[in-house]
Image (tube, rainbow, N blue to C red; front, side, top):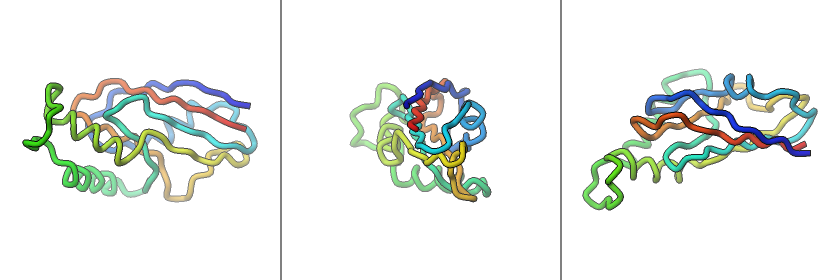
Length: 136
């Protein structure tokens, strides 16, 4: 059986935002066992799983990815939406559009130190949508 729904995230500033509790609050009646896939419906935002305890990890992610994919490069041709746009597209492809998490005993089976990061790569990204698919 498959369930599917959308979550509209509140506007986030650029950066890596821990959204595990927000996602869990939206999940109702998870199956005993299965998998969940969370997909970001945007080309300039991503999703990943990483450290949920120390917020400095998210700051380091931002700094490292900005160093790998800097803004204002003379070789960018897709620039009409701002200096953060083309780098945001590249960052999204590097980080990814979706994650899959096992469901065990009606709960997300994340590791002790794992959390879901929503990655906003635009300075002013606006409201973002996630598609959540639950397969049991």
